[in-house]
Image 1: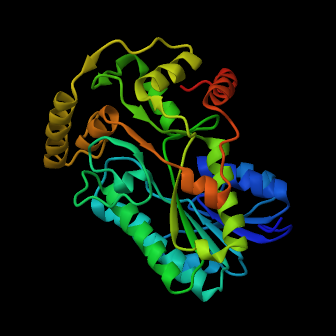
Image 2: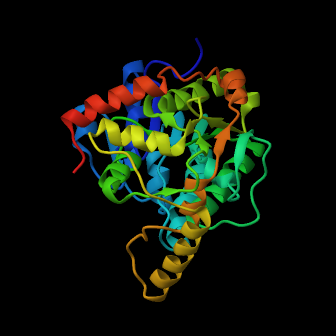
Length: 337
């Protein structure tokens, strides 16, 4: 099978993170030479024999150095979350991605796989079975999707000028080792309130499936360069009721389900009020609610992944139920504090 070959040199940005780390593990199993680029040093990567380059995505010279003698780049690193200044998100998500693109060009990197997000096309309303033809919205209510969108567009544009690239849009990644979604749900479990009627279907993706999709994208891009410049939604391919999924995660952590609820309009109004107050008083901490989060929690957003199946041969190997069982076992060993 053509694809990432034995001892092919691969760079993973954000290799110490949740998704980046999962990709690194699978690459090591393949026998690849793996290098990571992160701000910090990670003992787990050192123990795995990974070459670590420390640096900042905003520094062209450091990114250039990280991409030397590399054949495939998985650009996973990003500033995530829903709160912060547009400038900070822009620097990491857009400028950092532009630096990766330039470094790939100057180092003759064969392929770039970029981790995007479905939020780049989220307009605040229900999205049911949407495919890759859906346009970018005219307005964003948070700097994360806004800056990920222009970064994705930069990757697409780079493909028109010769850089072989694919962008992936994984939605709500979760599983053992999660450092974001699962801990947030568990830590806030006792005070969480359902937003909306609780019947909004959403896509999620189990961590191993998300990592598989990235490697498949690199494989298929080598086999078929004509895929360059394309964007793909990836998911479990089985939408779930968002609030049922949250209750399932709480259950695996031994916690009670959510009982209280408020309307989407009420949550949106609270979010708008909190955003105004936090900005007015320059509060750095993330508000408990924002307009973007209110929309995300109360609307349907699931996607048609037919294109990923056809072009990338992507089929989620781990079902949601199996993933939840694995998560439960992991939480027994490593309970979230």
